[in-house]
Image (cartoon, rainbow, N blue to C red; front, side, top):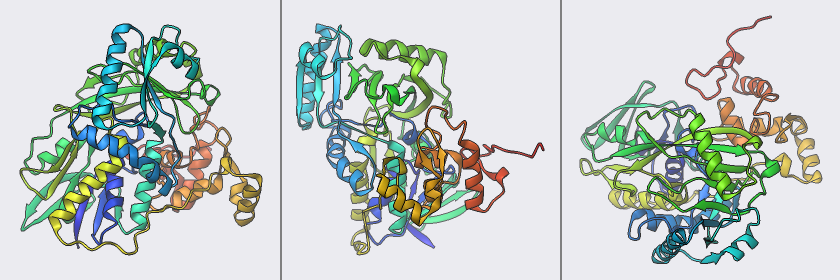
Length: 477
């Protein structure tokens, strides 16, 4: 079989593009090198839906950021993904930084960002009393929001699969050949043929492009470390708090998450190793210093976990989107750093328009359903809803993760969903089992047992995140 489109990379860009393409009668396959979706930048970023005042006017970043922000709320509603329009504040600590705030305001106007205003100190402190007394003012962007990036990716993938897209995990592309208008894409898992390729491989998109002889994708890998703080301090601020940006990015932020925690970070360090996601003492100290500058009450004693994400910074400082000059059937989706998450719905439309225009007359998929059924979340259900669920399936009455109140029924649902979980981290991202204070210390072993049972495999075969990350090796007694 020859596919019409193969998307390489099941991050948020690949997943939403797959969903967008499923609106048409096209044979589409989503290829992922690892054991699950959202295993790159899409599982380790700030989760901020940016308003769009940062990007230089006239760039793809500016255009698609503002459009993506406008689209995000409906996309999340259709996919049953939690979203909160909490607004963002860029805080200044001097008169000089207030000039930067004014510049960002004017850039936002040029980009078409709605609902912005510049606040003085009194107005700012009235909105966010836990901010430092040293603040001078801020840019208030009401259209900004927060979303869970990996939950959005998972939901988009599920919806794409439901609408006919094929998902192939552990398909690490090793070579691409082109003959008679068709690509042959090979991995250790086999070979597929396709007429079009979308290169959405994140930090590895330059390597994929080079497989067709295209070296135009120039990326700098930028590492960013974060801390997640306990829900007990999750309401310390209500807005996403930025400091004035530098050439290395938007700086250390303090932000609530859609799940009720507090997020602080990221650092920004350019590195050569595309697999270096280590956390460091230097990163810890940087985050601590700058987050306290914004909000003195922040304490890393409340940290429950830390993580590192890698983002692919394009040397031209703009998204790389569109047909390759080497082969017009190869479509670049590279250099998607911040505000890539925000822009993702708009990028998916942009790429789909390119492909459908190139193919010509493409019929709509009359059976397309863009709605994803809401996932049952026991912790959010009413007592009546809980009793009804337990009556239908007693597994909803067995709490597995006490920190986050996640039931066995929810874990089973996550495993058996379209493109469902195949490892412990996959369950964690879909249900939050293991994301609480104990970080899986109590529920981890039970999750392993449920995975083995539902997947019909040996318990020793269950991994943390695929790729040989086995948890158990043999019995000791």
